Every structure is written in C-alpha cells, then in structure tokens.
Image (cartoon, rainbow, N blue to C red):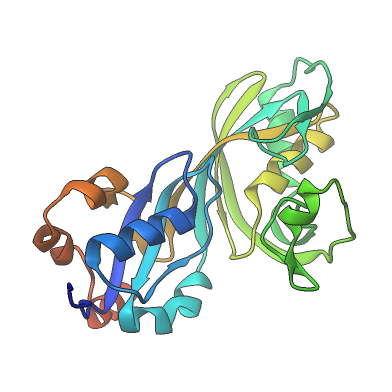
Length: 240
C-alpha cells in the first residue's frame, strides 16, 4: 500500500472547460497521493483559468487566499437570457439586439462600478437550510436570495461583435460574473447571458504559465512537486 505523501503548499492550475473545481481537487489528490486538498474559489464547468489548489497545511490559508480580488475575461451574449445566467442554462427569452454603440455598452458596464449590491443567481453553491441553491434550482424552485455587497474596481471592453461583447473585469470576492452579464443585458434592454469566462488572476497570482490539467495528469510526479509553492513562497509572492 502506497503511503500518503506529506506535501504542504499551493499549486496553481489552469482549469479546463467542462469540469468542476472539485474534479481538479480529486485529480490532485490522486496524482500527489495526499488527502488534504482544497481549492480557493469555485469556477463553473463553463469557465476556465486560474484555480488555486491548497495542499496539506496550505489548506489553513485557504480562506485568506479566497478573500483576494479577482480578474476575469468574459463574453456576454446579448439578446438571450438563460436559467443559469450562462451558456449552460436553457434559454428563457430571446429579444432582438439593437444597434448599440460602444458608448452605450460602456455606460451599461459603468453602472456596475465601485460598491453595489448583487443578488446571487439561483444556480449557485450558496446554501439555504443546508441545501445548495443549485439543487433547489434543479427541482424548479426559486427562493429569495439576500443581495450581497460586492465591488468592481474597473472594466475594459476588449471586443464588440454584436451580439457578443468581450470584456475584462477586476472585482472583489463573492462576485458573480454570470449575474454581471445578465444584469448588463437587462440594462441594455435586450437581455444577456455569460457565454464564456476565464479567470486570469486572483490576488497576486496570474494564470500565465501555470500547470494545465493535462500536465497535472501526465507529468512525472517529481516535476509536479517542483511546481508546488511552499507557504513561505506564497507569503513572499503575496507581499506579506
């Protein structure tokens, strides 16, 4: 029987589309043969990008790492609202997309700047009486959700090719980019949903050059271990 390894630290992974954050945790457990593994901030199956995996004693700083600001690049598809506010949901309503100018779109994004309250989507991991909302949503139930205070530090319109708008947003923890896309679509009068999403940064950590899921599965374990950041390294990188 293989002994369980003792590895402590943080592993930065570029999550692939179509898998859950928990899938990445399970692969990490298996590859590194260690039980104590967690992640910092769920990425939906549709999303790709930076997933911070904590290992061993690294799980003790999980809440600290989760509390940091995030950066995302996403695409909102205007003209369609969906049950999940993203492309994985069923279409609820379709409307024609007006010939919007860049200024009109930028002004809609600008309405969600600084501090504001955001109502979490039904398809989320928030729990009501111990049951995740997404499970209630699957049963066709909708319950009232408490709006949450969030913060957007800034946004950038990368590309406009209607009905799609590609954007970058820097935001606080607990921010739902799906809801952001949905709400902007409502402001523009035609509805919208999140078609694609990639987390590009979390705190001081960026997605560039990090380990892919395929590399996590395929590289020799010794090579993967060299990519695990020790807790002192994490502190230095965070500037603590």
